[in-house]
Image (spheres, rainbow, N blue to C red):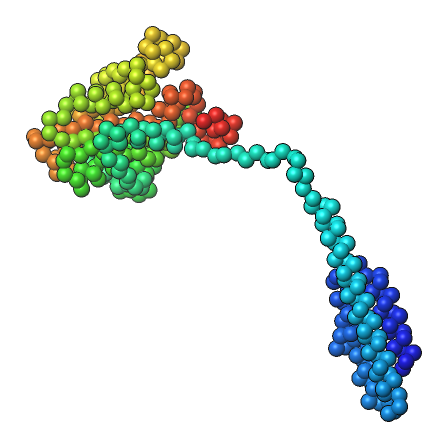
Length: 339
């Protein structure tokens, strides 16, 4: 049995010396010193030995155990030292190298344009009001005095969810909700997404953004509308910007106007951007139709008001001289990074 212990010692030491990982060392510890290990099996046979042989074999077994344990600890220290050296070599950092530049994000040009527009109108005393993008047909059309045969109500122009529910085609329903729940005087703006059945091209998108305004009070005139838009135009595009009103027709305003701004490139002299006219069409507006006021419980004989709606994409395109609406939605960092 002493010879067997010598074999276990020699075999164990040799295998420990040849191990190359801490996991392999743990397997060898179990193999030789574990509950079912080679040395343990020898110790279990001590009861079969004579009283003279038992202490000799037991003492020899303890010596073998101590040698194997000591060699395992020594080898483990060697492997850990090698792993540390390797880690220091492979993970060393050259502190003299230049640091990595971190790009700082910024607002999308549409969002920054919208924020600037909101800032201008809030400074005039307007309240910011928002509403749902999924809207009732009544609020989107009927309450805005749009007749049943109005072209905008066709399925070719509007996204219908059901016969009575649509994706709003403008933020004007927010004005209806405000007039239904507030008492005059009312002064609000309502920015947000709107949806129309348009094929994407340089000037159209099925999803875009609008900002609409509404003022209801006693003695409101078209002159108040003109003055408000003059201040907006000058604040947004520069002090020299002028506005021009042209007659138009909208079902929810009477009289209705198209509003032009003097060309931002030539100042009204005529250039390629404004096609030689000196003016650029920017928004629609008008005096709130008496039918709309009455339908919201506001007496049109006592109160008047004006409303306007301007595209946020159109404003950004004019401000930054962008010629294709689709650039806003393509998430090309080469484009967005310019802002």
